[in-house]
Amino acid sequence: MLKHELQNLLSGIGKAKHENLIQTISDYLAAGKAAGKKFENTKRSKQAEEKLITEYINQHVLSKIFIDENRFIARGAEQKVYLDKDGVNVLKLNTGIFYHNWNDYLNSLMIHNFFFPATKYTLLGFINNEDGLCAAIKQPYVVANEITNLEKVKRFMENNGFILKRYNDYYSNSLGIIAEDLHDENVLSKDGVLFFIDTVFYLTDAFYNAD
Image 1 (tube, rainbow, N blue to C red):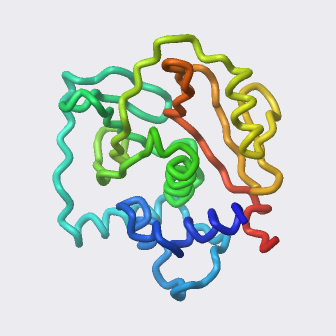
Image 2 (image 1 turned 30 degrees about the vertical axis):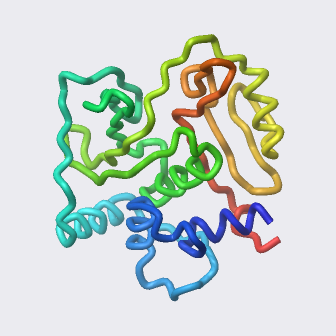
Image 3 (image 1 turned 45 degrees about the vertical axis):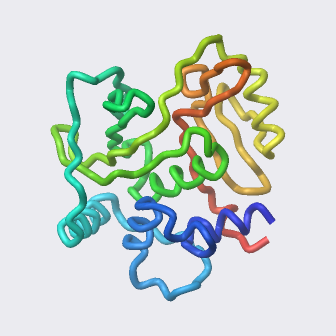
């Protein structure tokens, strides 16, 4: 069942557990939870999680993240975007402002990677700057060559069990997951193919049900 697969993914159970730093940090924030315990709706404050993340970074000497300000290409409410030196990826510094805490943000990244592997997020680490603590993530750089057809986005989401609720926000009743802001700046179209580059997923209480 898809819902159980996602629950296992976010709880660190299954083949994707050690896939990348996203799951590693998520596991660290969930420290103390018994191995194999089912995914639960437990929350810490964002400030408390920032202390834990900083603790992890200090304990595990992660590679220093260098941001070349000359390669800045865009800024949104939640992040700054830079073209990576390889020219095939972008680097994003995300403040997680759209989320109650950092674990919610990490869950959103993992859900995105599950549904949209073509634009997979790779967490490089965290840095502190004038915006506060920011997640540094890498993602394939997509250059659109046509206008995104939002009806096509709607059909795609419906095929994956999500129903349009309002504007460009969707909800999956079977999964208990909200997907927001799927407008034509966050979903690009290239050669007839949709590329979801900036998604915002939220888990509702229904996601944690065992059904």
